[in-house]
Image 1 (tube, rainbow, N blue to C red):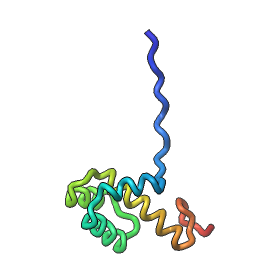
Image 2: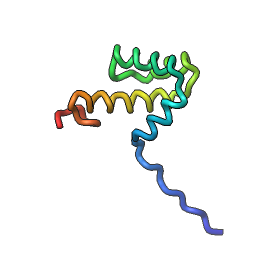
Image 3: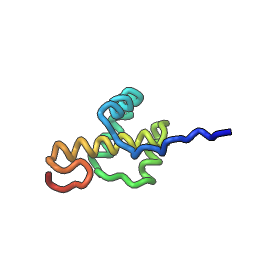
Length: 88
């Protein structure tokens, strides 16, 4: 019997569509909590991400995705590279 080959997982990318889909799953109150945390620290450590997810009752991956998309948006607004943080 031949095994079906599965493609390797694609690298994580955070498109506008993905971030919009995520924002539809988060309530305005949850987004406000995440935004307040983002304003305090742009890079949140894994422990704080876990705590935020538990506090809001959402998967930790959703919090991580939100922060990644928000950081990318902030870097673009600041004129910085989306991934490297350097000047474009």
